[in-house]
Amino acid sequence: MRTLLQLGAALLLLGAATTHAQITNPDNLIAPPPRNPARSTPRATDDLQWLWQYTKPAPTGDHAALIQDQRFETLLRDNFKAPQAMWGAPGSPLADAARAFLSGDGTVTSADNRHLILTGHTFIQPQQTGLLWIDLGATTPLIVFAALRWNEQSNIPSQPDAPFTLWLFPSRELDAHHLPDALKSAIGPFTARTLCRPAVISSAIVVEPSGVPFILGTLEAGAVPALCPTNPGTHA
Image 1 (tube, rainbow, N blue to C red):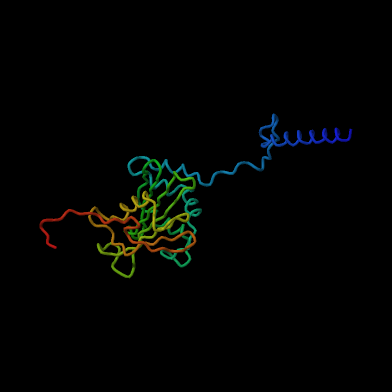
Image 2: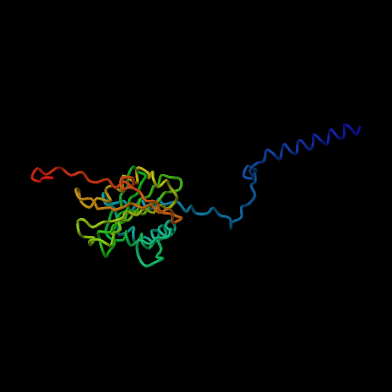
């Protein structure tokens, strides 16, 4: 008799365990338990789809409206926190530098239905220009702020041979020596002053979010010199 009772108890425990294993998600119950209203689903911080509206009207978009959108200020402050010393007073936030280089007249365009490209310049010296490149197709959007910063030791920015440094600040770590091809494709036109006179870039520097800098060759960064037709009337 004891053996039979033990066997029966074991079968009951096995059945209970099997039943418990089948209920893996409370939502599968007929009457799910009420949810705590304080635990509402948080808003996705990486949802930047609102940016697309500013690529209209084609082909240059609505740069002025984007710059005035309060979400734009939040985007810069949330994504650019690396230390920087290229612009402003010592210790100036990178987000402030980005806004300075993007606030002047520019364009808002898209490429491949995936990448958004914003250009602008500083109000004081229009030759010092900025680029904001965003990969909206990535699970976590990659945002890169690029700036053509005048090297103040030589010439004034408006002179044809004034040297610049190309600064690149990504929102997250990436392989500094293998930048995304789509980013390099945007940097090429950005660094071209005119069709046949690209900016004189002395160096290209990628600064990771941690503040660690990497020096690149200008070609590695995508600053491809413009190809100009040979003028038969000139001699080498």
